Image (cartoon, rainbow, N blue to C red):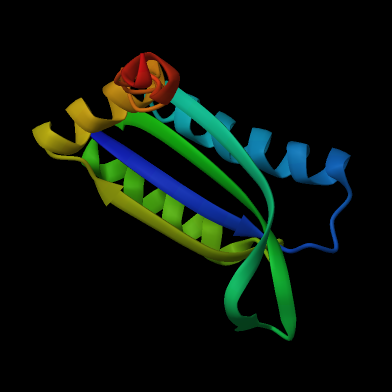
Length: 124
């Protein structure tokens, strides 16, 4: 099984409840197909770089999972059939991307770097 990451953009016209149902639908497609969900991240409503279907915003949702390769084509067919999905992107992660994702989830990039002595301490 390979590790993948998929990002979907849902139409902004959906209520929060409907968008959660949509994400749950695709999550169940993954789990029923034998995938193991590693991480999910709801990015919320974001501005799009360019209008899609005359909409300038969309709900972003990222899912990281391990799955057999055959499942990806089935998943993407379901993305295309669902009119609530404006765009999607699924990528296969290599070992470097997997390591980066693990560091990001552990919070390694959010820690402040050790600062040098304060200006007051240097003046004394």
